[in-house]
Image (cartoon, rainbow, N blue to C red; front, side, top):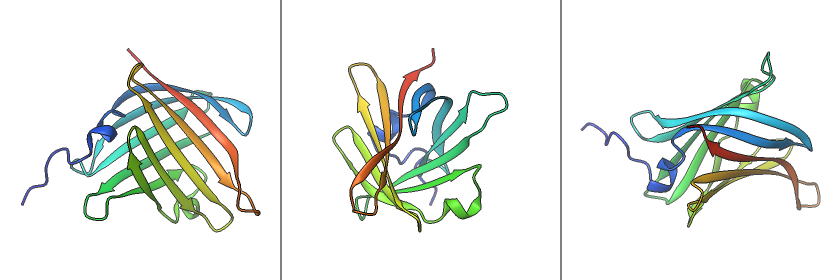
Amino acid sequence: MIPNPDNRPPLMQKLDGRWTATGDVTGEPAQYDVIVAPALQGQFTEISMNDVRAPSHCEARIFIGFDGESQQVIAHWMDNFGAADSIPHGTGSMAGNVIEFIVLYPQSAFKDRFDYFPESDSWALEITAQQPDGGWKHFARYDFRRVA
């Protein structure tokens, strides 16, 4: 059986396209060129992020899938910080205009929350890090705007 060419939920499909993401990482300004497209025969959304500095200091690939049976978001975050930091995968959920997942790294958990704003066809990505007391602290935020 050949898989559906785009098996992703409609909300994930709204991420597709070319974006400029501006915001901060731990309070420092950041800007990324972002390209989002279906991957692996429509089973995942691939987000390719490259910071705009020359040379680039950060490059990341995020693969986000949705398992219809468990109703769970499954995410794989890989970046230029190395293979060890790509383990483990993240899990989460999708509700309304929000895609959210948590990655339980050995040193700390990170929560990634994508919020879609239909009125402006834009997204925000908020990343928070779990603290030793169990609370969550700002790590990064990016506002995604479409590139014409």
